[in-house]
Length: 224
Image 1: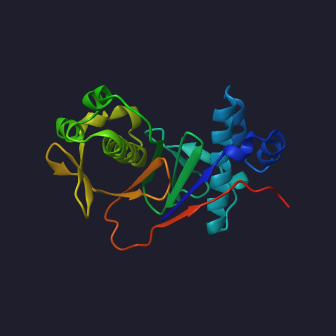
Image 2 (image 1 turned 180 degrees about the vertical axis):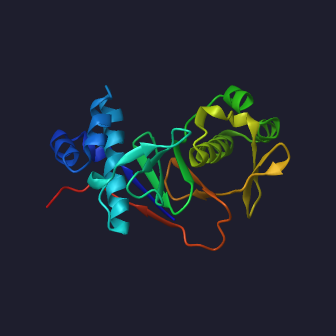
């Protein structure tokens, strides 16, 4: 399993933006042009750049990939369906995760949030735990819950079909699990804690065991 992330701020440079747009697939170019706001365009292009950089670890190229969507609308590579991936972005950061089985990742910029959101979207146990915290600790814990839950929705492809408060996260000191209707869900969870100001979590189908989790910071690079 590999997770990559990058800051898209350099894409604010128009020349670099145009140059990097030439390096990604027509599918990604279409996504970029469909967005109105430049910040959203930068994030979408950044996702294409990061996909390409990650795919090269497997000897592949983003421009050559053909995208399809599964039963729940989750995208997959038609020409390499055994390589699973998940994309997320927030603020100026983009993250992409790759694995040989179902995987989901979610990155969120840590910011002030109303506990009304937690009451609306989280299970009662999660909401009450958040109320016992204050300040930065409360904000960070909110986004721990949020990104872990979102990573599960992305891994399964359920998205809006499964409410966030239909299952709850158990944040034990050594292990993170998810439960629904009293049953542990057959997925493993993890967190990446090295991105200042952001929270990045992932979810993968089955037991994670002792397999290596490679997380790398990447950058927007000009062609040479």
